[in-house]
Amino acid sequence: MESIKRDLYLNRLIERRENGMIKVVTGIRRCGKSYLLFNLYYEYLLQSGIDPSRIIQIPLDDDDFEELRDRKKLSAYVKERVTDDGVWYVFLDEVQLCEGFESVLNGLNRRVNVDIYVTGSNSKFLSSDVLTEFRGRGDEVRVYPLSFAEYANAYPRDIYAAWKDYYTYGGLPMILSLKRDEQKSAYLTGLCEEVYFKDIEERNNLRGDNVMAALVNILASAVGSLTNPTKLANTFISNGMPTTDKTVASYINYLQDAFFISKAQRYDIKGRKYIASPFKYYFTDVGLRNAQLNFRQQEENHIMENIIYNELLVRGFNVDVGVVEISGRGEDGKSERKRLEVDFVCNMGSRRYYIQSAFAIPDQAKMQQEQNSLVHIGDSFKKIIVVRDDIKLWRNEEGIVVMGIMDFLLNPHSLDL
Image (cartoon, rainbow, N blue to C red; front, side, top):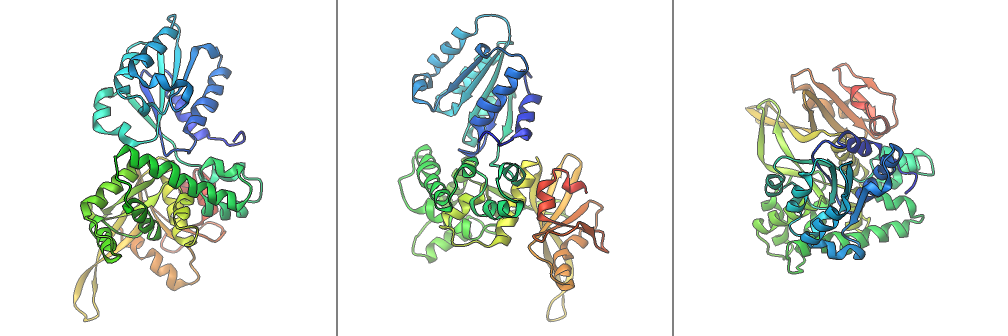
């Protein structure tokens, strides 16, 4: 772990230092939140001249701190240690283990000399109730598993070996310290069963049925495909597992709450409106996706699309699936409306990019197919096709940028090349 750099997130914490808000570090379990706060940020504070005695560290998932899961004891513990008017830094790990933590944090945050940082592994933190409790004083830093650039930076072999490992085993930091393939696959399979699903079942009082595992299998098999709860419920029924769309929708919400999957909505680019259904679902970590399928379905093209989606989220974009409606003629020669798909519409402030993930473009016919939706958009925002091949970046006659996956992932400014 020592050689893994998380500068992107470290800088996000540094920017928020002593800003009067509660810094909430969220993300899927085992993605490196605690390491970021208790190691990297702690070291940064020491190097900037803070005395270690002024940093109060409370890992609530540690048995030694179990009694502090009581909110009154937690509040008293911190207040006893804040002994003068200088700045005190409070680090609370897995704060959701303390019931009523919101009132503790709000109480501490009223003290102008206390700078608060908390981590948590579920998005209940960000529910309207909690944000209301924080009264606009919560400032989220979302942490993801290692991006490919972070992973490759700490990987001992060449970049192409790193890519093969990454699209197979994903970017959870622990993967880098495991040497053999069997260890990596066992680690990921164990995490799914013993950590993530158990956590979701306990938190949502599920009755230990098979719906969760089956649902994750279906989503994993069809990663990046359009679907919705009704469609998924029909798949269950056809496999002899009668399930309602409401149950499926609830379970999807649980998986999203645990940051296990993300939902991409469809956006009508010309009509400038969202389309209610269906959606696409992507996995926060492709290694967990592959483990769920026992590493049987290794379609690099679908996995690459998932990795591109995650990279865009890491960079801070809002990401939708684009739809372009065009007029065309059907086989009978009659006029009809067609819907073309753009893999990703990425927005950040006034910036927008349209991105297609194309595993390979061996000929002009394939290029035509991949760029068809892009050329019909009709605005001047940048349009990019990312391919698996290690090619030199070029622009085709339609002004579309074509770049290789390595250039896209390894250069943080690749969208502006």
